[in-house]
Length: 165
Image 1: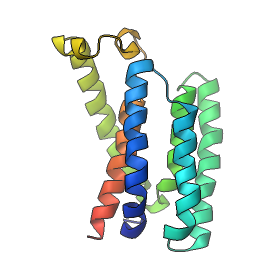
Image 2: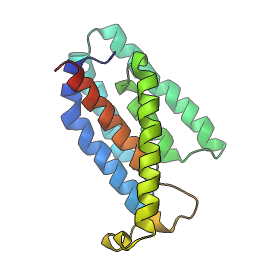
Image 3: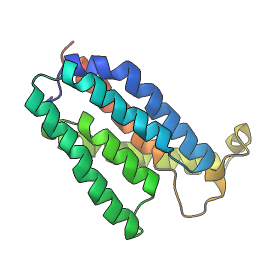
């Protein structure tokens, strides 16, 4: 993997709680909060220079945030995705080493399929009663993408951390 195991281990304890929070808030309120996106960005900005192999690589990966934010804004304006999804993808982008992009896309595809099936099954069964107030049950065609996006980043960092173990 292109992301070092060392960096992944340092990012994991800070990033995973944010990823879980994003999945939960998107399920409960159909919203990925600005606070979560800012915390995720802040973690990379603060820890990145200390845990990345070299400073130019840190800068390039930080640049991925800007690129994905612009792309996300365009996709949001076109109605292809929600603003929270776009911001979360942008905030997640620096954590993904460019050499691992194909892996992350495959992880996301699998996670999206699993999240969609799980959500739809839970919505149509008595499991729904465990959280009757969640907005995601009533959204019709809309889907809480945070349920797939957050776990994708968390799983990627876990795989990168274990790659060097």
